Length: 238
Image (cartoon, rainbow, N blue to C red; front, side):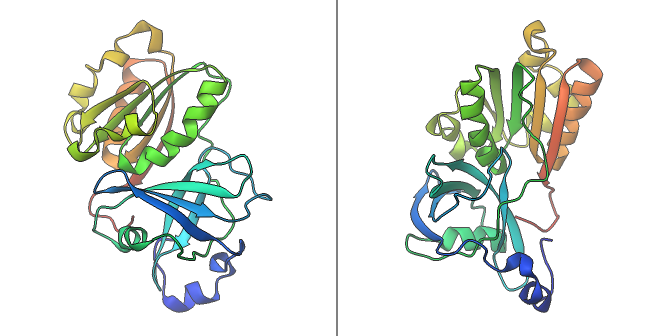
């Protein structure tokens, strides 16, 4: 529910805070357009599988979805990684958050099962909107000794962020370049490497590039696919 009349949000229990005392304890700009936000509170009674998210009311008539990038062992601090693109109310809301601000959260939700512990090789694809999910993948893949690769299409100012986040085995491509053209996707090295032809592919981010990548995987190799487009050019959101 990205948008609804104010009276709908006002009367929905869904947007009444169910986790009291949440506040912003730290913020950090990883670039001009990517911000890491740490939230302090008591999350002990909630589960946070990979892909857990909060639907946050960002204006009187709008809500946006944010994936949990990390939560500590004590379950009293979690991190979000958000894309500040300056083109919507969600971006504006997250941009203005600062330490000490209070924020209302309902309980975390999951709708997608992204991680499959039975697979041995994982290829993760995404853009700036996928960085939080990628960060949540990393520790469990490392602890379970999986083989993995991260592929990102990013704006030039964000090329350094995968390394900054510790996302090992990452390859960064220019945004709206290679993945706009299905014929060029076919030439990706990983799709020509026999060691990765049976990998599990997790495709997220731009709907159009996700569709292009998925089509090539389905026609060219035998890899399994989990796909979830987060945004589409010209469609309200984020």
